[in-house]
Image (cartoon, rainbow, N blue to C red; front, top):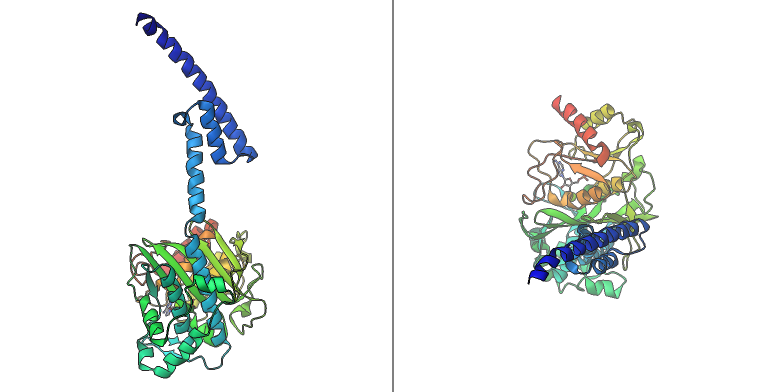
Length: 428
Ligand code: AMP
Ligand code: MG
């Protein structure tokens, strides 16, 4: 007893001494490995744990390395299925909209708010919702269109059904993944009406704008097939199919980008997952083409910057945008194009800034008009806010009731842009 009592502190001291050496040694190995990047983090943590003798003695650094690795792994696989389904669903829906785009008669009808809707809008919405319900049956959906009008108009319904049943991807596995064909015209109407969620701050909710920029679509200009996934009010996945944008990410935005689109060299899908960056890939007709990472272009000189805005003067105040641009020192005329193609274009650095200035006090932006674009721009290194500099809040229902207007710019200059927006709007 006595001997033990005397010897124990010594033993403990030498133990502490050796563990300190091992601790320091493992730290050095860890630092060296990080710099050489030859040893993967999990292997490194194993080495560290061997060196220090037990899992309990893993250093704080290697512990956080393990956490980081598993978080990264989880992050890159998180929403992988949602992303794949969303992109294929958009690609298939875009195939349908392109068929209508090339038709003279687009089956256009007027909605209650007097805005136009075509057989392309209804058909694309049916195809996207059917793919989402096949894969994620309990998810809610906020989509722009509803089938009420089609229930009263059988010829219109039949026209849409003809389109929907004959639009497929040329890839059996992709079609299988999207759940295959819709049963019949009545099932199609029910599917269209499944986009009636009220939205909100809880759970998984998809947002769909089957043809954003319908006016551009009718004019032969830009439009986008838009799909976003929100989880608890936060956008996690965003996909934009832009059939009339150049495939080439480096193609500069020309003033005529919003008019007379042809198929030649055009068609792109933008996508993003929160925390995983943004990507573009050519819009295809079968499986997904290879994607590449996109990033916003840093603005070095405002005089060289370009800004995008709506073609429709009723959607964004072009006069105010002109004053803001002038005050910022932008010398180029605005690039006008319809739809969320604007978000995609600045995300890949073809343009720089997107200005959307309210034209009325009462209008509330719709979540399907912004969810995908907002995430894609932020994941490409941008910042997206309303005119007051607040992030867009997708958690308050089908509209962005808490926001007015949209200002999107590279993160480094966004504050500067908001300052000028505030100055100009303050003078109104
Ligand atoms: P854009 O092509 O960017 O002009 O946006 C098209 C979207 O503008 C449509 O999908 C409409 O939902 C939306 N919109 C309709 N009226 C207005 C308005 N008064 N202000 C802003 N956006 C509007
Ligand atoms: Mg829209």
